[in-house]
Image (cartoon, rainbow, N blue to C red; front, top):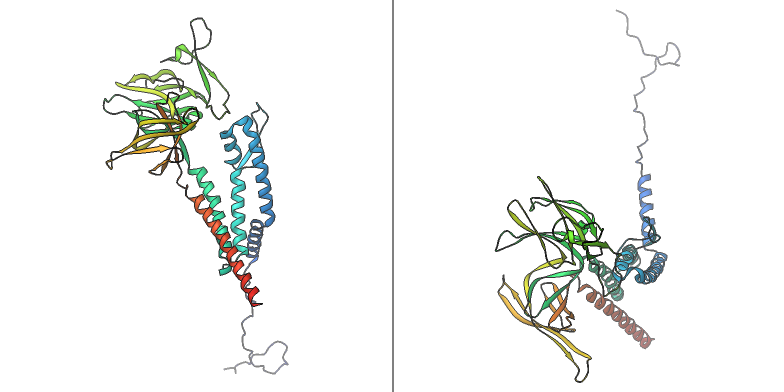
Length: 424
């Protein structure tokens, strides 16, 4: 048996044995996490905060707001109050185009955009620059009040709703009507004790086209909608095309009119609608707010009425006009007071009481406010303005906060200045 050989390392002298070197693990550098995207995100957020909390942004927004108010006020001459409000102050972008053109381009940020940026600017600058302390309580109250004031205006524009309630003496109603919106009511009058009503709002009518509803066994197609219109008798010797084939349509002519801009006038909408059934078309009807009575038709052994009327807001109570009074100063025609004595009745609670509504003394009930707005020329009818505004207390609370904060801040600084002067 041969003797075991000794292990020789490379580079060692021949015939010499070298001890075995221990096997050491290879040293590796620890992996570094890639945090460049975190730094980029941090820089982006810092830039965003700096932008929204900048005083320059405040000045720019206030300047744009002044220009917006100036332009919106001038636009009321051609557009009217309501349309100018919607296009300039109740929008994110103001568009402009030549009269009669079909294209428009953005020219100004709208009221919602300017107000929203101002709100973000106020919140960002407040939390960045102010630290809560006892001597800054007044400033905090002022800023919170301003934030509530801006939010309250936004909530009012979004949630507030105005309508009117026109009553003759002895008449009762459980709904109010919108002044500048309409609806197409399809009324099933088959039952003698109750009617089934399907109301289609103006926004859907303006889109025209076919309208389906599960409560109707047919389809209502709006062939033409007129935002403002005028009806006239067609006559026997005219060549004008008939407005519709059924109801009052064959004897009438409808004319499309531009929208009115005066405060004391309103648009009178009209529409040409067609009733489509699985068996075919029943014809077309002209419906309009000019027409004071519904138009009837029958289908599948049921009777229906078609009427275009002001948009209705139904309520769980009714109001009956007992008496309207128009008082004047003795010996003159100068109005002294307008008042409506109404009977408020609610079946689900059994409530029944009389209320006197007069100038500066509205009725507040069920989240709505009823103001004395106008009256009929014969002094036997009253028109009440109905305002539904869930956020009506927000501006009052905001003004109280701002006033209290300013007063508190002034008093604290006054006392501090007086104390330092006495101890000097």
